[in-house]
Image (cartoon, rainbow, N blue to C red; front, side):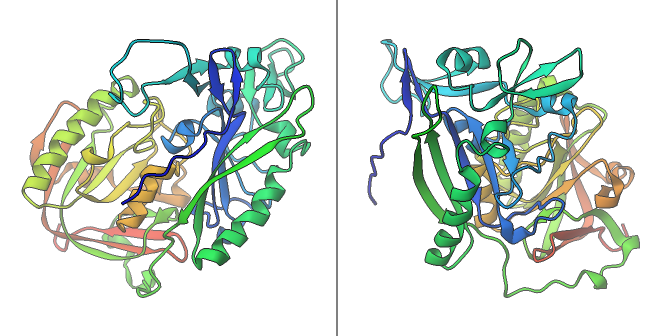
Length: 393
């Protein structure tokens, strides 16, 4: 065991200290879009400290080979809805507190107005024009701000894509496996260069298990409870007789934190009974923003062997790849399914699920016990997965 003390990358802005932006880059992308391939990798970046990224908050996602392709920014309204609104910084103001009471006790969460005041939004921001229903690069004109990274990804005022396109293959070659890399960047003002790219850490990223090749052609469609072409994991899981799900008719985004506590209570009981289970809920699991999903902590879902993120009309967000949360999930070979609203990418049979015998029910969460074992088939090479109904169910 060892303790590593690492310098925090950032600049001082009055009483707050933070980098212009931070990010997590992966050499393998579980959700490639358009022309991108899984091997092209994926990057999540956010203004300020990397806590926004690793906690599953709102970030900007792109592929180094195609930095101009931003699937979460298809329209101006989507840019306003899906862009970062707050960021983290270190609060350097003197204060009385119990030392080491919380891991993030000296962090503060600030709005974009603070970033604009500090000058850090200059190279990362754009402006929404209500008159034209357009997003203009830069923050010279008045209007709502959007963290778009336009000057970085489109104008390449800082060569972020080129740096990551070179570093990711080098790190993957050195570790002989796909990798996940954390970084932070500080820019200059009034010109972005010279800049500092802080290479913080790199670790293995579990992609799939080459020892198990799953042939989904053997799975009949009529026996499916859930199908998705956006999954993590590889192999066949059995011995799953319990499903814990957030009832779609009772779900309220404003109650996400209460739902997380309810899930944690069910998880503790299932763990005590040694019953692994399938977990189903809307939005992003483990998000730090309760309006994007259910902000469960790892100990609240520790006994789940398969996790399903399903989109609902009132909770339809991009699937996340929050660094620390998903690192635990992939390392433990936990299956992960994304079921979007668009049926061509998957489906979930809610009617069948709600007909199953209820073992226990809370205000928002329901636990059912299946009459026999369900099977989960995951082809990690192609990103496709199936959950089969138990025979006779």
